[in-house]
View 1: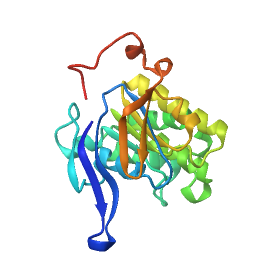
View 2: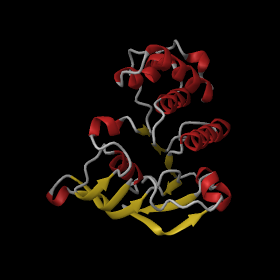
View 3: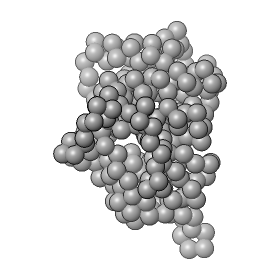
View 4: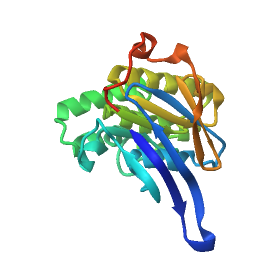
Length: 238
């Protein structure tokens, strides 16, 4: 995924609010990146543009290495929203299965993925419950399961631990990292929790709508296996 001078402005004239100023970055497959910054710094808007959910006011976002058409590419990008955004009328299992059903996955394979994803985030016992019966933390874990079941190539998580206690938050980060490793997927997590950011390989900073990747902090001990072995992304997927 590549952003080139992207900016996002909401409103017009005197009421215009610039959420993201011209920012550029590149996210290779296999990378593990935390975007840190306070609330209101533009992290969510930046992630939404990376996912193709927000159209930049200026600049360009591209996804070399992913599908050329938007419908196909949508299935390769998994987004964990700050709010769980579950479908109220569907059970937990049905919510997790929904993207798989829409993608035309055979029922047996879809069910297998749903079961595996719910087990990973430790909410299997909630499979038949409706979203209104869940706590905020439980709903967030179900939302993560829905993304993991789709097996995306790019995982974008917006404050995924914000509604969880420390133990469940750390477990969720474990799951995201393990899944990204297994799929060789890129993982980008926005957070204001430095303990979460420390779990990832690289840290970018967002401040007043400006993304700073030039002074990125890198944690070699958290690098994916290939990166620790000296692998290069040159010529690889982006």
